[in-house]
Amino acid sequence: MGFKLLGDGAGTVISDHRGTTVVNVVAGATATTATPDSNDTNIRVSSSSDLTLDIDTNTAYTGTITASSASNITANGLVDGATIVTKVAGGATLNTTGASALKLTTTRLVTLEATVAADDELDLTGSTLTALTSLTAHVGANGILTLDTELTEIHSISLLDTKGGGTVTLGNLGSVALNQDITVTANGLKGLTIGTIDTSADHSVTVLATKMSGDVTLGNITVADDAGGAHTGLINVQVSGIPGDIGLGKLTAKAVTVNAADAQGTVGGSIAVVIDADTATFLGSALGQNWLNITAAAKADVTTGSAADVINITGASIVGASAVFTVTTGLGSDSVSVLPGAGLTVVTITDFDVNTDAAVGIGTLSASINSAVNAAEYLTELKDITVNASEVILIANGFVEYDGDTYGIASGDLDCGDGDIVVQLTGVTGATAATDYFTN
Figure (cartoon, rainbow, N blue to C red):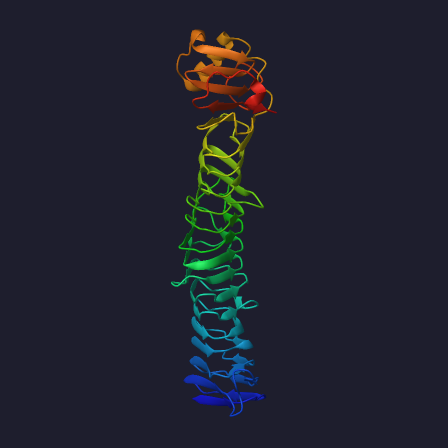
């Protein structure tokens, strides 16, 4: 059954038709692009199996369609503050034009495919999509898609702009009760903003953003801990080569990977990226500043670029455990600081340059390590090899040279273990003043 809504109409149409319902919104004879019509007629089709809304040029639809039994919804054209309400729809296809705004109110919609043409907009903010699991969006150059609402069941998001230049803003994705992996794929967009991304224990979150031409901003990403409070699952954020800035919230999982290699903007430029994991790999921006606060219970590799990067490390959180960090900061006046954990924290900085880098924040160097003999005993325990006193140069208390590297040791005693911090500066020799290399 079809309905034709002509010109600047209003009122309410009610039907109990059981087949497909097609609503055609047609402009009046005097409507133009500059002075389009606006039709506010409400439609109630309680028994229709499918609903199609076709909106002609030079007009917009602003009313409410209630299609309680429709299993599929299609909307084409300019919707200006319209609302579609359905109870059982499983899928929706939107091909909107102009500056469209639409509210979808449905508790069972599973899949949504939206196409926003170049220079057009679609704002779905205010929609109720509590069952949505899959979103596919095609956003043309300079197009804008906004879906800033809670999508607690979603786990598959594909955002495409093959010509480059579209912008997508999404609200919070998933929940810590969602029993699914979450994958977000964004290709060719100008900008991408997403709220929080959450899933349940032992699952994964993957964000793949490629061929972007602007900024990427992601909120906190969390894979829930297990019942005992241990981290689970993995997070994989691939944003390599992006020319814009990259903003990331707190990333919490058993294993976390962030790949922003070859990015040109900042990573955590205004708010630090926070990683809380057992193991982590962070490949930062090649050109822009990286600001990272990282806690790793076991192991982490951090690589940054040519800007003045800031890296704050917190070590092993478990008594009796050790956390090993490898840091390569690249060029620039970099700053690294280390806070002790409950266990042993060992940090190797592969390219420290005393002429450009700030002294490493390590706390108070150990007064107990006050001789080459004491230093050799400590290094023997640390490295699980025999280190002789004749191989060690004690520069100052807790500040030693061994085997072509320089070490700063913050320890309350001669035992290598819980609460200690050891920072190894690879290839650094001939040091004299400890304060040039390590600071409180």
